[in-house]
Length: 318
Image (cartoon, rainbow, N blue to C red; front, side, top):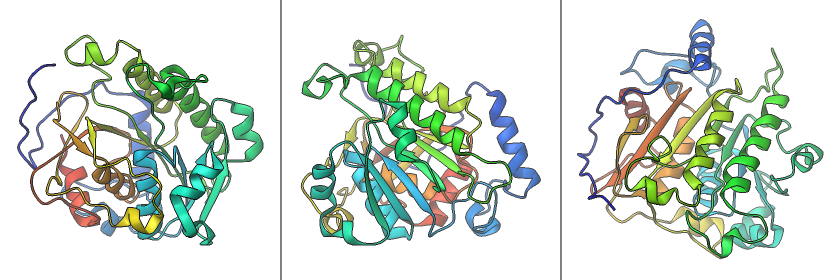
């Protein structure tokens, strides 16, 4: 692999990315309703919970891939922040093991669904009445036991994501207050650089190619989106823990966050805990709408669950 790039903490370098047709329409629509602010102000503070694109605390958020390394942390942090969560997993027993006794809390609903089957998503009404969707699906880059039974990159990172996006778009209703306000997709660094090292090697099994295809479906869906592209994931995955244990998870001292739009940054690593924090913070930030960010973590204090700090980070990303 190529030598890792050293990234200075809290440096927001310019990184041009292709302009998408629907990105302008999303931003314009939000601006007309007062949802987009000038960089430097706090979007969540300036706009309030009623602003376009902001997912109000207390709303129902769907998390798919809920028992995975990032998914289980996202569920925990969403509940901690004050959201209700519908956690989707294929293995109900596994979900109950991960979330422990907290599954009896009225704010957490566990639903079993195989996203590879679009009709299963429709029949389970998975996206009904949710204000946001968080997609934390993923598999290994190279053939492993996780690829068994049709769980390879194409089925996981493209087919399942495509089915979920299409069902989410179908749930949208113009003028309905319950319209889904955000779809947060956790993807990967390198999706636009599969012809360069080290991503050329990482894509030998097609994982980056199919993640990119999943991103493209979302970008052209007209659903307001935020895409997070972490590097090599650290911290966890946490297994056989209840949700209270997940909330106590720490990322040592590597919590300083650097983000950059597009796909030029090469992070040494990215903490799963920080990715989950970014998911929650993005729901209450309008700058994140219609953008894809590479996300890196390194030595130093980070934003944690401080919304104002995340607003600054999203608002100043270039």
